[in-house]
Length: 262
Image (cartoon, rainbow, N blue to C red; front, side):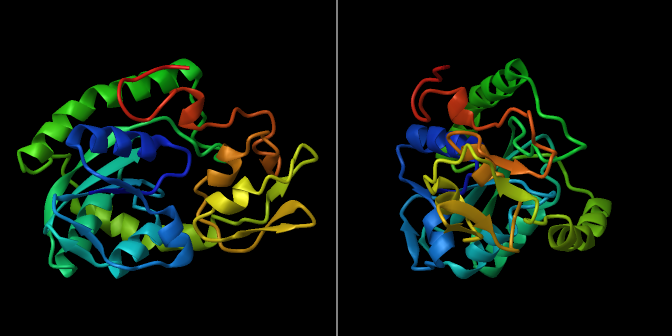
């Protein structure tokens, strides 16, 4: 079974492509995370867990969920990571989680996908052509990864050095605590009160007040709200004004089968 969480579609695209080729089920974990549903998930085939990378690791809310939920049936677990180019220490941490769950960690594959973190002043958003190139290159790698999973071979990715662990382990909690404020988020007058931002927030951090979204304090900076707003009505202070929002559905017609551009 293929399990995934995805904010603006990159991970969902890869997950569904893999599930389609494996002829396996594909489960979006968003609602389970939002409702804290940890009822066991059973799979006869190996598990394939697909995750984006935030601050050099899997999202903390996804890590916490994987620690709690029981994965029964097949003991083998593969990991698929999507990122803007660096997956940090996500691999070793995933291995550790699976070891504690008495699962067999079967390695990871890394896919370099378009960026969605448009509130950053350090990582500029890519051009449409650069986005297409990254999607195209990742799509081309999927058959190779699927073949290794079908053959029950381990996935291989770059080695994570000790200094990366030593730097990232203390850095990640500090960044997520102090550098991910939700207060700058706001809805402009373009808001149509559809409530989609509320529904896609994995932390239930958005509530609709007087037909407009309001953000509480907890935020993962996943960009699901700002990226999925159908009328681009959400801003983050002044940083996002005039910037193109990214979500993969702007580029790809469907997430399974052949790659079809819009």
